[in-house]
Amino acid sequence: MTDDDVRTDPKPTRRQKQAARMAEAASGGWRTLLVKIVLLGIVDAIAIYGIFVLLLHDQWLVIGVIAVVTVIVNWIYFSRTQLPAKYLTPGVIFLILFQVFVLGYTAYIGFTNYGTGHNGSKEQAVSALMSSALERVPDSPTLQVSVVDQAGTLGLLVTEPDGDVLVGTNDSPLEQVDNPQMDGDKAVGADGWTTLSFAEVIARTDQITSLAVPASDDPNDGAVRTPDGQSGYLYVSNLQYDAEAGTMTDVTTGVVYTDTGVGAFTADDGEQLLPGWQIVIGWENFGRAFTEESIRGPLVYVTIWTFVFAAVSVATTFFLGLFLAIVFNDMRMKGRKYYRVLMILPYAFPSFLSALVWAGMMNESFGFINQVLLGGASVPWLTDPTLAKVSILIVNLWLGYPYMFLVCTGALQSIPDELTEAATVDGAKPWAIFRLIKLPLLLVSIAPLLISSFAFNFNNFNLIYMLTNGGPRDSSTSIAVGHTDILISMVYKVAFTGQTRDYGLASAFSIIIFLVVAIIAIISFRKTRALEELN
Image (cartoon, rainbow, N blue to C red; front, side, top):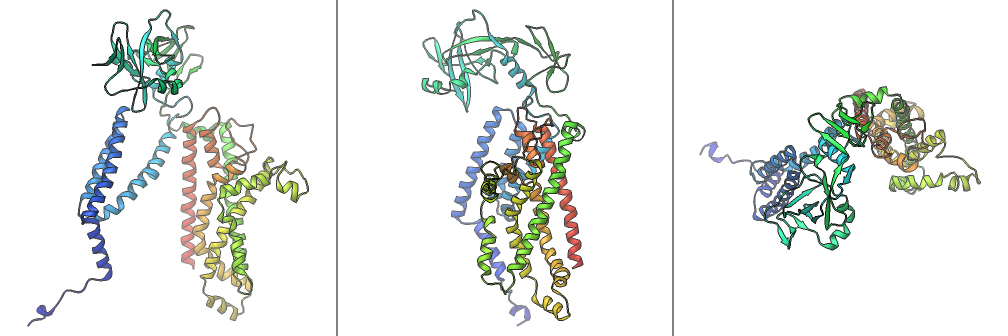
C-alpha cells in the first residue's frame, strides 16, 4: 500500500462549511427559487410600469437604462455562478441612485439656468406663453366635450359640429379618434381613456377649467377650453409664434420678442417674456457666485462664518467632552454612572426638537432665560447679529458635547494603565502625563471623528434652520440670506424660498461646498495618517 492510498482529503474548515451552506442557500431549493421569482417579479413590474410612464414623456435614454439594468439584475439572480454579484448588486444600485446620480445631476443643474421662469423645455414655454394670453374667439361655435383621463393626465374629448371627434391634453394637440363611444351626437368615451363622472368633474373643477388643449400642432391656431366640463370654446392667443424666425409677437402692441439664446423671448429693450426655458449656460452660475457683488458679498461672509461655526463647534464640544470624560473617568468619584447618564441626555433627544426648545427659551419677549434667569431682561439672543451667532454656538455646544464625552471616555479607557504607571514612576506630573502620553494617543483614535464632526457642522442645516432660520435678515443683499446662515442654509434659501428660485445657482453653491469639504477632509486625513505614524 502506497502513501497515496492512505492519504485522505483534509477536512473542510468551519469557514469553508459556512461558505458552502451560503452558496447552497443562495442557489438552490424550491423555497429560495420561489422567493427569488416573487421578488424579481415585483422588481420587473415596477420597471415595466416606469417604462410605460416614461414612454408617455419620450424619455428614451432613461427607458434604455432601466431596461438594461432590469435585464442584468434578472441574469445575476437567476445565474448559479454570480454569487458575489448577488450581494453587491443592491448596494451598487442604491449607491448609483442616491450618491452618484444625485451628485452628477446637481453638477449638471449648476451649469444651467434652471429656476423660476426657466423650468421646462422651449416647447413647454411656448405653450405656456400662448395659453397665458388666450382670449375666446367671438361667436365661436359651442363644442360638446367630455373630460377624460389617461394615466393621471386630464384631457378633453371634443365633438365638433360636423361630427368629428378629437381628443387632446395640455401637452398634446387634438387628434382624430377612431371608433369613439357615442351618446346621441356627443362622444362620451374613447379607447385608452377613462371618462370622468359628473361627481369627479365637480371635484376637479380647478384642474379642468385650467385645461387649454391645443387645436393643432401650430400654437397660433388656439386652444379649446371648457368652463364646466360639458361645453368647450375656441380660444386664440394674443401672442403669435413664428417657429422659423424664433420670435414671439404681441399682436396687441406689435412688440417682437426674439430668442436671443438666453432661455427666454427677449425684446429689443431687454424685456423678457416669462416663462422661459432651461438651457446650458456653462460656468455662468459659478462666475456669478464670485463676480456679482450682490452675491459675492454674502457668499464671502457666509463662508467665513461657516468655517468659524464649524471650527469653534468642534473645538468647544471636544474640549468640554474631554474635560468631562477625564473628570468622570476618575475612579475616586462616587456615583459616576449616574452622572454619565445625565451627561448624555442632550444627545438622547432629537436635535431639531432641542433647537426648537432653545429657540423658545431664548425668545426676547417671553423666553425662559430673559424672564426667569435674568429677571425680566430684554436680551435679543436671536435677533442681534452678534448675539445670534453666540446663541448658536451655545446651543450647538449643548447638543454636541455628549457625543464627544462618549467617544473620549471610550478612548481614555482604552489607553493601557501601564503607560500612566510607568510615567508616574519616572516622576512625570499629571499634566505632563496627559499632554505627552494620553492626549497624543487620544488624538490617534479621535482625529477621524473630529474631521467628521467638522464636516457635519459645516453642513449643520437643522440647527440653523430651527433656531434662527438664518436670521436676522441681511436686507442689503439681493438674495435671501441672514447673518447666521451657513453655506448649506443659504443654498436652501436660494433654491426654495422667495419669489425667484434659482436652482442653477444653488447647485453651483452645492458643488463649491462639496469641493471645499472634500479638500478639507483629504488634508485632514493625511495629517491624521502622519499622526498615526508618529505614534
